[in-house]
Image (tube, rainbow, N blue to C red; front, side, top):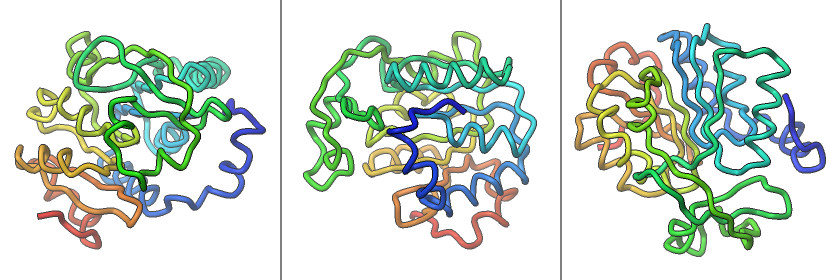
Length: 234
């Protein structure tokens, strides 16, 4: 796994239990559903991709990462390990195809956020704790666009895109309507939860870190052992 040692050493060696509940839920989903197609939306250095890849026999994986440094590290890791079933999309996932201004932590490159989202986030938003002072232009894509281009429908998505999840889901309504995908995601804007619930999906709170699990109607029954201890968002 390729990382920037100075930047990521603390995260790797001190923060492994950072999101234990989300990790547990994703491991349970892998055990119960054996996903074959996985999308890592906001992949960063790919921690959850490597987790899922170790827990199930993936046949197709897409890692979406707009920050060029992180995307390059992902590509190096994939090449080094010969993961022919994985590819990196160097784009931010949003509600449209094009380009967008993207604010980044130019000191470490550890995080970034679509500028229009940053500008409308509250002062307590987690992205504001980072030094997101540099601004770059990155491509955008949508999940429906990726499917239209031939990407297999994902069985499981992990999404962590710093408050842009409502945009990503707006660009994934065809995928949502198919009702075949489980989504584990961080969410700070209720519009994303409301969109899923309006489509009949069940949404569960995973932890106090704003992580959620969303299930299409057809899969709710099969996930009862996973969701039994979770709070359903009504």
